[in-house]
Length: 291
Image (cartoon, rainbow, N blue to C red; front, side, top):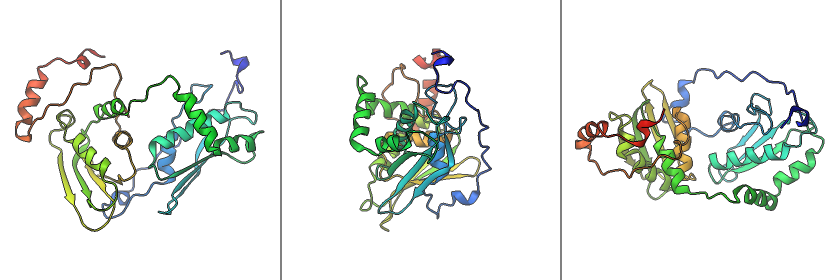
């Protein structure tokens, strides 16, 4: 598409925000880590603009200061306001849909997602906000996006697990009360972390589990090699969203490249893991031929 046909041929590029060093208190295992504006911003800041090779953060379309999070257990919500680069941007509705789609995939299912245009930043602000708030219309738009695309959650889970690398991890503790909260995702994560190919990325990782009867929701606590900790609740997550979120936090790709055959994991006892790794290192796999 030529520049003369773009809504905004010369958008202003803004400097991205430099993250401060993490506060060690944020990783206290005795403190629950709620979802906040910074985490939501991290989910959407790298979405690509429909017209330009820049992210929404670089174009200042999304800003952390315009994200609001409600943490009422009975009515949790995320309210994101985005600012199109020009008042007559024809891509505003598409950008709003992309933000909504990203958050729908990244946040717990029970969180209400509100996406709307920053007041006064677009000529058809009210119309677009009504579209983004119209559940029936959103479902139709989702249908158009999914038309002709086969969404295979099993394949997506395999690719997410394949991208999982524990090189930065020292130990993992999975904690649940079997009679409180939905522990399905945590139990599935336990299985994925115990798979030989995942353990092979760092055989020294200690994986332990804890069964409680205190009525608190399931969570996992991950101690990193640099002394930091990752801890968050898992109820309300699908396993693929949980693993993709974990990949982001560990600096891994969300999904492994498609097109490489995914081999079934063998059942390898801990006592035989060292021999299995030695034999596996001598075996060529399709990924060995990729650059």
